[in-house]
Image (cartoon, rainbow, N blue to C red; front, side, top):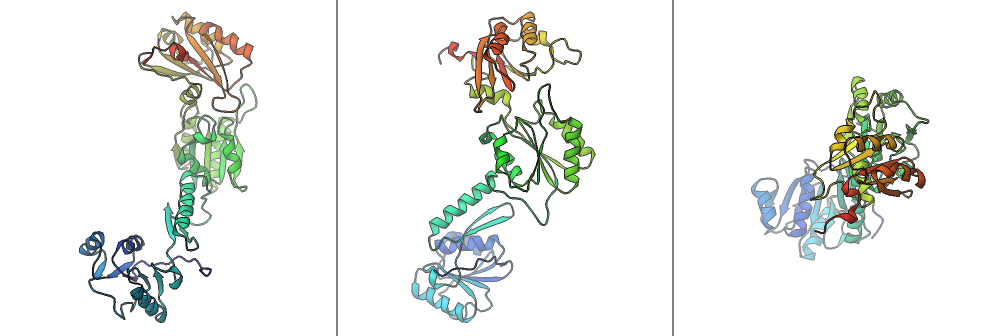
Length: 405
């Protein structure tokens, strides 16, 4: 085939003639109706689906064989009969009338080809496969899937850019565990404001002109204040940018996500929320620990351990947690774990309760330490475990002791 010039046709309301009424014609008619074409089908017989379209007046069906003059006033035509001579006659009339024509039986003998078409949002992907329809369809499917998954950048540079903030939960750190919608948001971002616990590998995939702002907070170390983060989100959005606030885990599980929403709302900035996979569940799962198991526990509680028991600002009832028999999941608790373990035991929890600490679950630095509750703090120190780590306390922390199914 000669090299083709790709072009998008606006066929809305314009007369298009399809000669033939079989399955190929049916497929072409579906695509033409999708773009609003005024479709006229010429064929002695048509498929049931085409007949239904004619009955509902979505197309015009002329129940006869093709005749010279059928392409008068047509903008575009498709020759899709199973008789090559008829298709050749249609193509010849189209050539004489300067109407572009697709020949379904012999693409190289027409003046146009139908690409493999896929759509995502308001983007249309059309692939011409050099005469190989399966190849074209495969490439199309790959591009559309990449757009849907967010692995292919889809940033608007003109028109309605929809500036604002998208709050994205990035999951526990593994780039493969962010949601599809989260990847899509990143693919459309102008600015990404990221935490250190967000999936860092995704930042390397961003186009070079995307601004990345590090909003990391180190335990008892360097950090960007929450007020500064809020101001950055608002200022960038008001400047007309599409801003992604990329956080680890889920933005509403000890992620201060709602504070950021409040700041944006007060400034008149629109915010979308993309939930994430919380580390409170996923990190134990990486280590083979179910936070619940039938017959073992009927509840699990997720607790922030960033303040020790007895601290004047703590909102946790540690005595109540000590009386529970189910699973307690602690986040941000490594530094205060000795005091937490003491408080849980004082509240009634058996000091021999199985417990495990999991560092960087699902990442290359993953490490685990198992010990009874009362001994876990010292075991963590001996093993050199460091934040971020998730602590799980309860019978589920020792799956080897589970009863057989």
